[in-house]
Image (cartoon, rainbow over all chains, first blue to last red; front, side, top):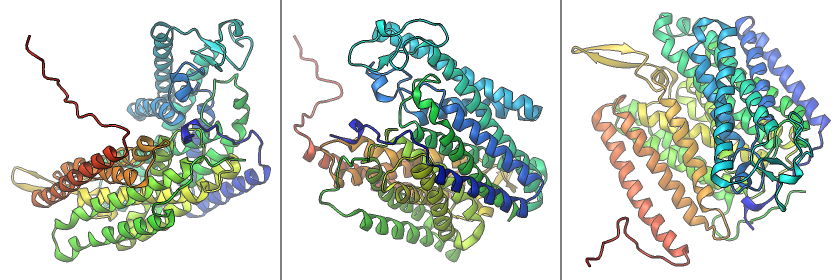
Length: 277
Length: 282
């Protein structure tokens, strides 16, 4: 047997002690940030934590099927969480980055719409391929009745599979997930961009227009890095595949929210240190 | 109750690879400091060699981690390695000559905390999770620093953010023509992230052999180095970039032919077919 065939063994249980330690760690980091860079830095850190939590929470909505979905043996989009989250979130991030000059709210909403749109297109094309290319109907293996449309599922499910295709609830979940993740990624980018725009000119003895390439590029690569960290942590939480918001695995989200918040606080703090040290 | 599926049977033990990879990339990164000593950019190719050493170590770490069923596919490990590595690496560049050491410490701390989060908060309960993610973050940071050295000849923040353009015979400073300002770092990120996860992703299975996977890792590293060497023409002198390119091409040619030999050795059967078969005349 190889690693791919192995079923993940991580349970659904919460670990309250570890979560408490994580939250304390986050508070320590926020405290350190308040000490070193009050004002703009602290605000940026809080924004990045919110963004990270949005990514972590949003990724749970995305129907991830992985390799079983590619073989028509599990519902969802046939690839892994990092790829899907990167696709939707980065599409949103780029969309939001274009609108960065129009203020926080417009840019974050643009990013969210970009991410949601990307997921909507992906889900639609995936459904086309499943239905017309592979010839399989959409059927959920986790619920008897689709929570939104009320369609029954077991009649369409092939024996020996966990369901297949992309049920309607998964489709909607994908769009919600892309919306949240795209907005979160854009929020991280905007927070860092504002901070860098304000601090880099003094640090490098240059005008704001001169340092713009540095600010945009550094904020962008930090946002990508934090995005991937949060997406992979969520992937570890749902151990590979999830059907969407109706999947029992969805109930694990509190763990991912805590982990994403701590990881974003840590990474964000390091990203802030680069300009205040 | 995680079950380990594959054991490292025979071959070089992981600790040895880790120590060798760590030392080799650190030494190579510091050898690039000859650029400052000799006031040239000829030694930038040591950055590429640091990349290869770090990738060899990283691909074996991914093998150790992914032997436990983590359920998310191998590429996720490469992504989290570089996601956490880039953050440590960028801050470390501000420490001047100490940058590689600081990158090591900083990335290890970030990796340790992320490893703790995945193992305990997310309840993965995989014995090597914390250690592996710590290693992967360091590998990510070293690989990116190696690419930075390869493309710019330096690993300090000031040199990574400023370059110069020649316009009508005049040399003007520009922040845009630089490793960070020109977003070359994003390309380096993906070059490394794909190169680190590909070897195990391609070689896993019952027929996995250590030497074949490590050779593929070196091949991926040199292949990325070729692309990065091309990019370095924009930032360092053409002669120095040419040296990097030649080193990369020679390294890639050697590792590729060796990998093909190992692939033929491990294959059940081998048929040399041509891309376009000869059409017989009727």
